[in-house]
Image (cartoon, rainbow, N blue to C red):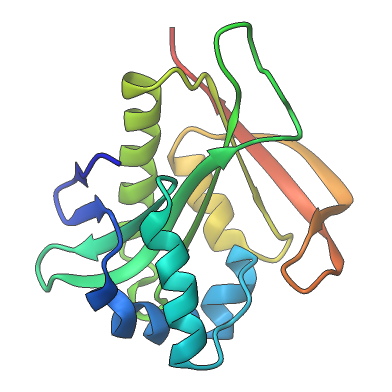
Length: 177
């Protein structure tokens, strides 16, 4: 997993010493629910989840360079719904979460732009898809600012972390020629 640096952020591999920062934002339902994550109930559970992030090559920790604090996460992973988008490579999904106290400062837009640019320049990815729940206008705005275009709304199109189905609004961006 490559480290991605922006003006204010580092997107980097997770480390065990990120546990306190991770638990701090991931226990917040206002952060977890919109990202389709189960809000963490305790540090033991957070540690188990964090260990799975550490061994993954799909999930970046988003670190605020100024404070060296992890303020969120960003994941790019296979889009199994689309299968192969072209003969060269498969499509991917992007998913993200940001600590609530950092909303509205452009951090997630900065992170998503950098991750999409990396994915298109450094890998064979040709299409990136994202979804958000109907009431998550903040996520919709991030996607729009990053060049994603609306595709469709699927009633009961998202299997949530809790096993229930929810409406999903889908956007995508195609690799520039």
